[in-house]
Image (cartoon, rainbow, N blue to C red; front, side, top):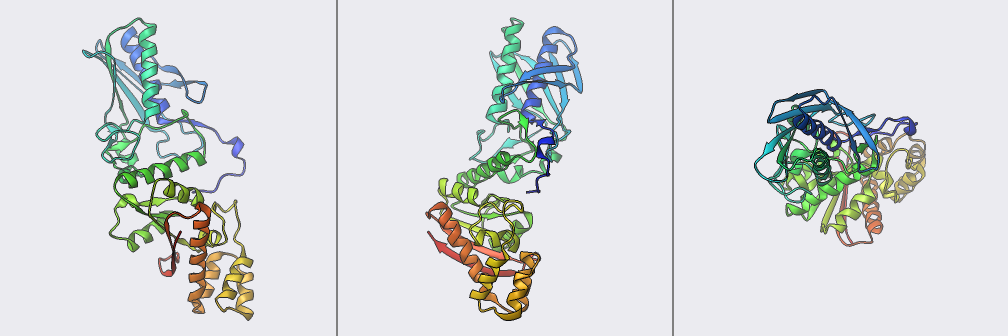
Length: 366
C-alpha cells in the first residue's frame, strides 16, 4: 500500500460507483416519467447523509432514458476516478424493478463473491440503493409500471485491467461497489475488505493453501515458487499481515505461505503484524541479535547495527555467506505469525531479494 499523506484530515472524500449508479438511475427514471431533462440528482447515502450529483448527459424518448455522471473519487487513488457511470431506464412488461449490468460492468463467474455466479457485478448495497431510490421515485409520481435499470461503464473493461477483477472471476468490466456510499482516501477498511473477498474467492474455488504477499513484486516471486496453484490462491495483503493471517484461519485455510522481502518481513520476524513504514520502523538491534545467533560477530555485526535499511542488512549477510541468518528470520516469521493467530494452520515463510533470488525459507505447524 502507498504511504498515507501527513495531513489526512485535509484529504477530500469522494463517492463510490454504487452512489454514482444510483444517482444516474434517479435522474434517468425521473426524465423518463416527466419528459424533462434531469441534470442533477440528490440521493441518500448509506453513511447517513444526502449528496447531489451532476449529470454529464441526459437523453430520453417516450420509452427510454439514459443519463451519465462522472465519478469523483476525491483524493483516493481509485482506478474508477473520473469514469463515466451510466444508467439506462426503460419501461418493462414485468412488474417491479429489474437491475442489470451493461457494457463495462463485469459478470461474476466464480463462487465466493457477494453476487451469485452469472449476475452483473453490482454488489448488494449498491443494488439495494438503486432499487430503493427507483422505488421512491415511482411512488412519488404514483407510477405502477415495471422498469428495467441497466448500469453501464463505457470504459469499464479497460479500467478493470487495473483491478483484481479478473482474478476474482469478474469478467468484462468493473464492479459497482460501495457499502457507505463515500470513498475515504487511502481507506484501511476498503483494503481489508478486498483481502476478505480475495480469500473468500480462493476458498470457494477449492483452495486450502493460499500465498499471501506484501505487493506485486513478491506476488510474482510467489507465483514462480508455486506454479501449480490457481491464480486466486495468490493474495496481496499489503501491510496487513496479522489481519490476513486471522482471516485465513477464520475461513478455514490449512496452509498459508508468506512470501516477501527483507524490509517488511524483518518486522514480522520481531512480532510486528502491521508492517507499514510509519507503524513500525526497522529494528536494527533485533537484526543484529539475529545475526549474532547466526554466528556474526565483530565489525560485520557493527555494520548491521549501523545499516540504513533491512535490505542493506540482507546484502551484508549474502555477501558474507550467512545463510543461517535468513533461516532464523523466516523461522521467527512463522513463530510470530502462528502466535498471532493462536495456531490452527501450517505457516510457511519465504524471503527473496528485490531481484528475486531466494534468501531463506522456513515452515511451522501450529
